[in-house]
Image (cartoon, rainbow, N blue to C red; front, side, top):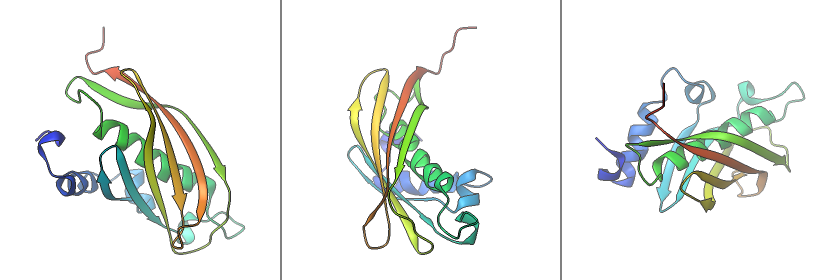
Length: 147
């Protein structure tokens, strides 16, 4: 079933079902909600998400942000049967440390063109305080590759 023929909740449920055996399952990343051109997700901050200093590992934070940003590009792509969006660049500023609870990612488009997407992903804590600010660029490529 094509995503465009599903409700927002059906899309979220379908994407969460595809987590098995992926980094998303390993890090317990879940999609939580979506609306027009916005996708949200969350990740617990447990001991497996921490660096040796006992705070959230930046790589785990970026994994959450890239998961949500990549999925947003692919959910909201103009022609999903012919094109796919893939990550090209990601940059993060980690602003606050955290050692428990959850982190939440919200991906919004800064630019949505035919061949590229630029998104901002804000990662916040349980108190809605900004943990990391991430900018991600995705390139939109044809699924029909030349041989």
